[in-house]
Image (cartoon, rainbow, N blue to C red; front, side, top):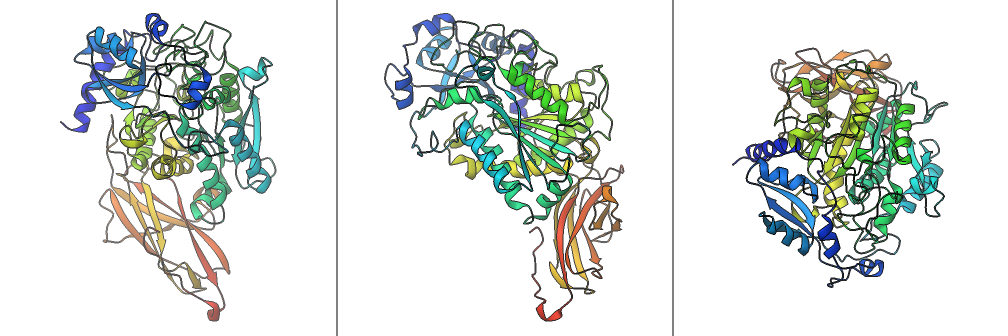
Length: 605
């Protein structure tokens, strides 16, 4: 059975069940919670595999029909945001496994959640950075590179608002080549903005580490890499590394066995487990608390449940502050009606990181539909959103589609709020991989550099490049590489520019993959991009004609230019007239032939 067919089977089952399920991820039933032995903070910190600290599993619960799915997702189990071909995944211990079997489910252990890991003295669980370290990292970057980076305090956490001693500031970082007025909380700013949000769900450790690496990558590569330099010259990159710092601080207290706290730290409602268990703890799910389509699918009114939505829309200071931040970064570019469309000229993009289902999710997340959502249950900008999402999944290989098409419907989410309220494209990455040694909410720290960051870097770069006019640019082809026959030359000596442009650069898996179109043109500008007055210069198809969806284009660059570094901005157009985002390359021109040292580059470098 192919991957698509296997996914389709489960999607069919899940979609049928969603309409009947009020809880997708919720606390364990009271009878289970009552039977669990008490776990002290000291035991959890030591990661002791004793009867008092039961071993925790990710369980495969096999579903044979839609009724099985409905029973499972509505039964109060901690159903995870990932799945297999004919089973759903539930987090639990031996007690949970016995109870599931008693209800007639076929259950197998997918994998054991490791309780022990080496600790680096300044971090936890093998190297993961604490909230304090993330804050210090941003402060250090801003101090070292005041020309590029600014830290913005955009609000206070629940515990700080309520005068708890361990409350937190909510912090974001803005990275750009700073000019007067840049990084202001003003939606009318002239630089397009890309906002990356991590750690909305506290237990999903990889997300904040990816934000850390994105910050470092941008700062370290300014004036080193032409694409990054272009991005920071013409755009603002905004990053929220830990959107739920109170919740993440609870996770940290587990040490070698991080507490699996999902929600924020609001303990004013309910009599929930302390210390937190995987399926019962205090707090509000910030990804069900947003003030758009609040209170619908996959939300709970039980304060101890994983998907507890709070007392009202944006009841939590973390969510309210995040919504205010987005209002201050992006213009409202969409009408109030559900059917209103954002214009092709809309600017800005938002991406929120979760784990761990190998998914790129696009709006709408709140609509409940069967397998492939019909037009009336898709977002008004579905063509642009879906093309954008599949462009990103070209880089990370994830399944792509709406929540109901791949997983289950969820309302009150960050990405739906960004699109539904402001009209900017908002997406969720469920950062995988689903299988092998790097899966789970708390994978080994070594997975960050070996697996997660390499898979996401290209997707982040593409998203950042597309933030200028995302609904228009992402319909056009992707420029995969730009190279020069030599990067350093003497003025007047021609140089060959080569570009690989592909309109079929879409992810392979998911629902509604766009059809590739023929490349119709490739052009470049010198020293100014097309939107800043650069004069377009056409490139020729290497094989003599633009007649396929993937083309290699060439041009002889006139190097009668001033001495110094020059930027070439390259983009392609498809047969429908859609231009894709720009990719940059540098050409260095010198006048003194005696110091001319040609540096030959290979295509794609």
